[in-house]
Image (cartoon, rainbow, N blue to C red; front, side):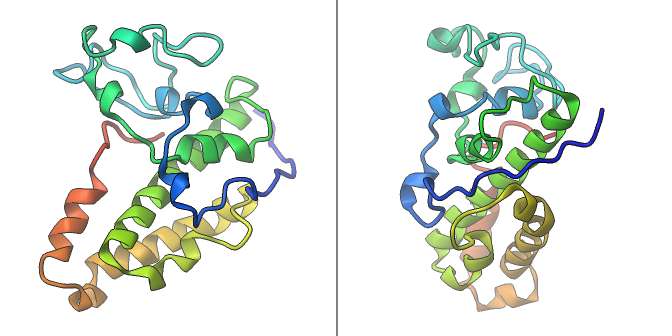
Length: 193
């Protein structure tokens, strides 16, 4: 469990301000939702899985062994989940490394995914609410680096969330607070590690 340090690339090929970044691309992801998120056995999931543990259906090449029949096998939650592009954004920050490489890489990769998952949700909500002034800290010029993401994203997320739910939220139209509450949980089938 050594310290993991490297200089990751900037996400210049995935500009955060382009609406295409809201589209999930599982082919460019390291199956981060299948590892990072927890789920409980029930109508949406066939078994319990703790956050940070790989799903039993995940293959060594980071693909789902039951992808074609997830719903029929009791995994409708997986079929409906959408990371809004957070998975491929997080994977790109690690420049070919995998969460399987070491515990240190795994921890940082899952943390990056959790932050980007929240950033993508907030970006989508802020665009829908027309609160573009709150987007700037969530869309750094040139994209995120891993160091910047880990150092500044928690504060940027807290500030944007606070503006939507705190005293400054009074500037929103009366129904927008309720819309934020609904949109922030759309597609969330588990908690990130």
